[in-house]
Image 1 (cartoon, rainbow, N blue to C red):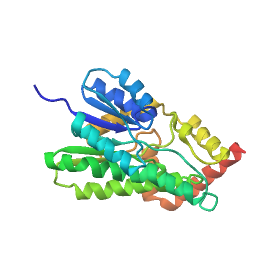
Image 2: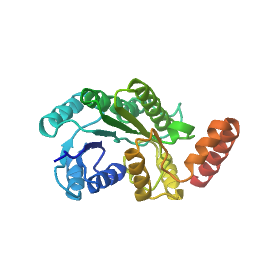
Image 3: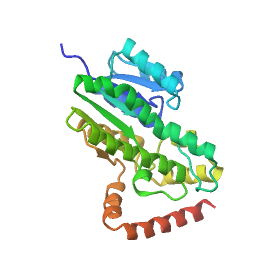
Image 4: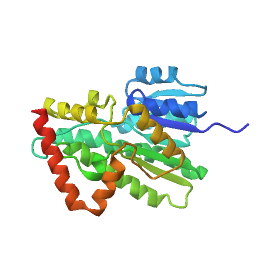
Length: 267
């Protein structure tokens, strides 16, 4: 009997991570649900179809915690076939108003967590000669998002890392994917750091989104199975990405105009 594929998802206790866990389990895969709050991961586990799933708790911003996670996964569950570096938080503010402590915190959680997870689970994939590393970035990391400086920069780092990793893993049997959604209707704002104005701005962007969590998760799940590299799962952003690439000056002007309109509505 062929062994079921294993998927490890960080940030699986809520939002996109939880939605993806449900889809992989329904597809017949075994899912390791990882979250900083173990009870949230356990709640996700309880809703999964099938068996052979697992729950782990880890702080993705901490080296020791992530090493303990890797040791536990290897001992109790074996190495995953698909790693999804999904855990992250939102933030905002401009370069001068954001304190260095917040910059460091965002980089630890949103970017260095991706490096940690990849470094810990990639070796087993390379030894096996197959696997997939998937990381959640953001459209803000591809095309800019005025007012979301720390968040956009941390997610741009995830995109760059994924591009480099894709090149490093070429020919090894390892595929790489990076997920770049715009804001959509999820619970991301619950983990947002920054001023109330920034939180309100982020919530406004979510409220305006034409995309639901289920729609976004369905698109991401399908593209992961296709081993697509760049996954832009929200409705309007694929076209905006093409415009940004081919008409960058026009895109920049429209971006600033939209940002100004949004700021006026927030006040």
